[in-house]
Amino acid sequence: MNFLFYTHSLISDWNHGNAHFLRGIMRELLRCGHGAFALEPSHSWSRRNLIADQGIGPIAAFRAAFPDLSVDIYEPGFDHEAAVAAADVVIVHEWTEPELISHLGRLRHGSRSFTLAFHDTHHRAVSTEGEIARLDLSNFDFILAFGEALRERYLSAGWGSHVFTWHEAADTALFHPLAHVEKQGDLVWVGNWGDDERSAEIISFLVEPARALKLRTNVRGVRYPQEALATLRQAGVSYGGWLANAAVPQVLAEHRMTVHIPRRPYTKVLPGIPTIRVFEALACGIPLVSAPWNDVEGLFRPGKDFVFAHNSAQMTRLLKQILCEPAFAEEMASNGLQTIRSRHTCGHRVGELLEVVAGYRNISLNSQFTQSEVTS
Image (cartoon, rainbow, N blue to C red; front, side, top):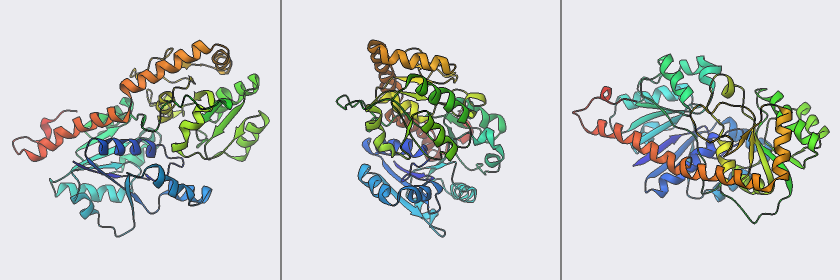
């Protein structure tokens, strides 16, 4: 089958974690013998910010790191009808312009030749729900939500009747242990400051423990205001700015441990959804300590794959334990890696996707069934 992905950006991962996942999904589809192609808009804020921040070098670096991935940039007037006509499955990310979402739905309504899916990987369904409520998803075959809580939100709001949970996962072709890399630091955190959704948590679960233990700590990410940068400097934490996702495994390997600090919407109103950074870190075999979130779906084995710290003092104690007890650190890293490899790779997610798609392709090609006969 030929898969077409409407993305906010495949090229840029500047404050855009969905690019990580889709790159891995496309690569795995290709490995399985399917076609995979991506489209992204000319006005992508992620790509524009990346170029403004780093110049055009990262664009060439993306092409070099992912030479097998095909992506085009569409302008106003682009022939979307021709694009979807060449696809068997079209998956539209939720950052796509509402007018284009409606247009793609109308194309689907007028054609049985392709299956149309909507893919949501954000918290807007609860934080700015009006933006999602205004989308016309009536002609979409099904919706992919990156957590069960988000799936339930779509169902309860009546935004779709066929909604599937499709978690993010690690692209293990890229994220894997690099055992022979020399350690250059103690603690690393790869994450963006964002819209004040976790600023207090970053101070409590990263900055204060790093200062208390005098750790060699590095932070990589974007959208850090000047006051945040000053706080990092005062704590002796090094800040390195944007980091291409393809370079993250090397940086993780250079450090002894990492942390996960979830954004508040994923702890308060969308429980059970970790960021993709958790999957990627564990896939690299690095010990991880997480600020609180509720793993209601049982994705991991808390206490074995990683450990929770419920406050700053506990985070400080656990980070010290990792440094002082190599056996503890090694066992946790091994457990986390095992869980990723057994359950949470892009290969697993492609298998799940193909299973969902198979039902809808069978329906569209077999007139004796109707869409109402498929249950989510």
